[in-house]
Image 1 (tube, rainbow, N blue to C red):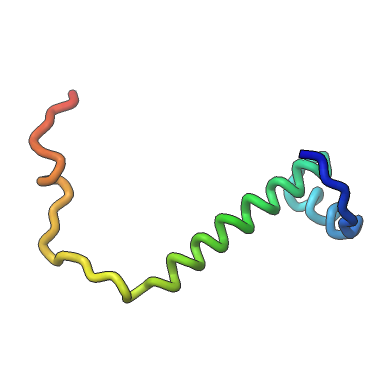
Image 2 (cartoon, rainbow, N blue to C red; image 1 turned 60 degrees about the horizontal axis):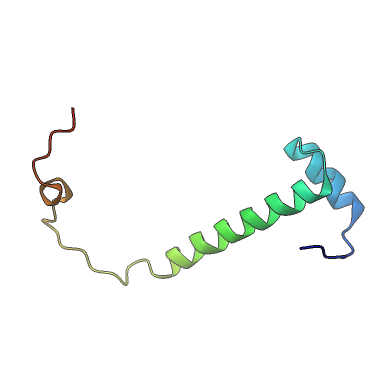
Length: 69
């Protein structure tokens, strides 16, 4: 999708230096990806302490006795 927006050239140039990326498009895409990851991580922290887990849960037992070797 093509979008025309004003982006501070100083920010773009600094981001290009820090990341080693060559194009504005790559910088903007990386910035958006990192923003999304950061917000998702923050959302997970918001639910910290609100979820109860079964103390004796054994995920290995739930997998069964499969031998994949």
